[in-house]
Image 1 (cartoon, helix red, strand yellow):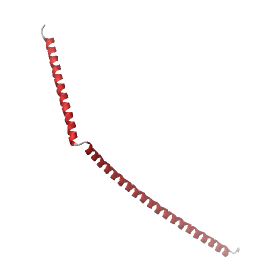
Image 2 (cartoon, rainbow, N blue to C red):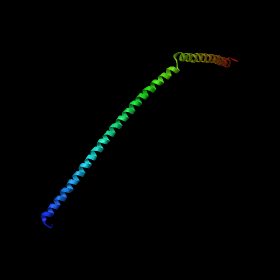
Image 3 (cartoon, rainbow, N blue to C red):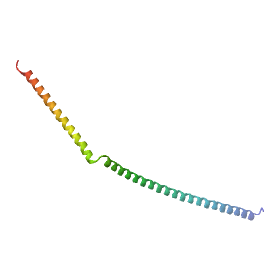
Image 4 (cartoon, rainbow, N blue to C red):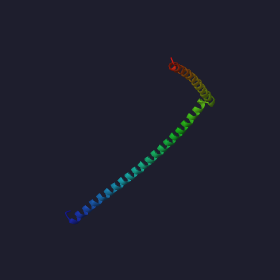
Length: 122
């Protein structure tokens, strides 16, 4: 057993066995890494697809909401109703401005009379 050839053969067998076991472990780890990458890529792809679906749904909801707002506005304010409201506002504004004009005319007349009395010779 102390023969150098036998020791060399045992060392060679041990190194070979150890190399074989390490190579198998490396292969197993490489396979695990590949599977994890594939799983991660599949999960990322699925997440991206889910995000795209969510954004599409959001865009559809926004469009539906805009359509609903237009329908509500059309139903809430009819043109004839708005015309009547604007006509009432215009009439009120015209009456108010006319009354204000008359009051300003009266005030101007009073002021002119007062100035004429003050400037009149005594």
